[in-house]
Image (cartoon, rainbow, N blue to C red):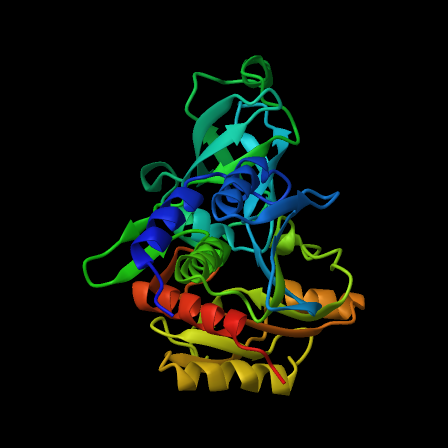
Length: 347
């Protein structure tokens, strides 16, 4: 089934530009809810704020859940330092070096947004010479330089900034002429975008899913508790999440990654083979891979004890949890595989 890739890319650009650190995903979930409603799906929220959108299928029993997550990496203010700079506490797993010099915004409790940059305490090579090159970046020596005339905690608090405020890093989204998509937070906004592409393809073709399907957009996946509820009669849980492209991984940036095992558990062989067979039958480029430091909402739900079969796939992404990159083809192919899954019953 054809995916409108221009629709997907346009939506992806919009999504990556919406700040959505785990713990403050209100704006992006509101945007996703509007998209579900525009596509004619009924929507409700979990008590933790995640979205559930239902698409009726040809068969109403043994519900399928397809999940992806809208939350991203980021930080909160841990300390307002004596010099007016901010010490942070990470949200999600990343290396400080991968976000060093990135521009950011701090959102106050009142909603005011103040710009700044992430830097090591000793950033100037002119002032600190080899110390700049040799110092390990840690929680204790990375800081936010606010783009405001501040030099003490009182100046900072006058802006409305306080300990616990969320910090959002700029995504720097770009699509190249050679077909690459570069941005922070393709994990997992690329999957949110192609999910909508697959739903739209079914709607425009007048095709019902094989089974009633609940689309679940979670908001705490990066912290390990994205899925805390599955609808009654859920038989299968398919997580949409990125594949990890890095030696010696089998994944590629121009293909779908179907995950065989992650750091918590193997995925069910029969479910995984069903997805691989669908990809082969529909000439969709794919790779099966294992990921060592990785977990999806599906594997976390399985470990938590939910009684549903589980699988995971998504576009191959280079430099995950850093400045990420994939290809237009991988995003499109992931949407094609999801559409094929939605319309095909598994015996």
